[in-house]
Length: 331
Image (cartoon, rainbow, N blue to C red):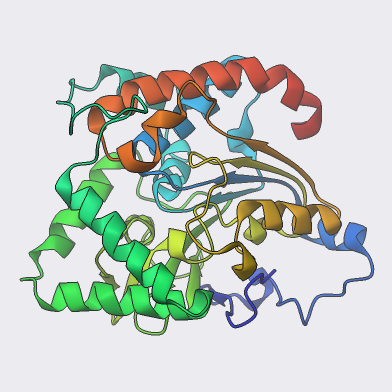
């Protein structure tokens, strides 16, 4: 499915049968047949920074402890921090991952307390938001925005000594319990920094899982894989990229940003639009967002490491509370 008129999907998989066809290639007259052709259950894990990753793990652990194992999805789609979570749940149990977040050494809080109970972002995060906000405002459409984001990242890299690539890969690798692609199908999103084309990595891409996740989380710089450069998968369409679940009978979306998008609504990239299109094609879709008591830990506070334990606990409590409502839907 492609919700952006001027964009195209670019799967790095070399297996043609694994690639979804474009809107123009897919028949529109029988949504049920489209759904059955792809698979049963898809789990969408959205981006949301460090606190978003913790919330995702907590929510999955809460669901699991209440008797609902969503890690058995036929397809897991991960974007940015959600790509880290997708890789993590493929290599360790939800309980192990949740416990590791709670057991981590306490982190110093960053920034003063804001009026919304969150932390005013430290300067690098604020500068990044301001810089990317200007790029989005100047862009004509989504494809133009992706090209501009890629060009900006490449410009920043040209001024660096290149050592950040090695450090970033090591950081990402340390977060993953396993560096092998799982047997179950997994999509990791990114954007080609040179062309602005959306990219989806999977186990047939010939790319290490660590590199796919590092590319999907590359916010503000371009990550190198072979001769190509990639930026954060959140720029593909939105922080969730739920459209990639097209054809699956049941789709569960966990969105740390609550479905919010920084792009104009008329670009057709908002999660709500993608959910509507999935349902129109015959999928049953459920979404889980942070509740009102925890949403202050995301957005501007998403990179505050001190908020990871409370974000994970908030997600856990939501997961346990919602498991009963979701059991019939998922099973």
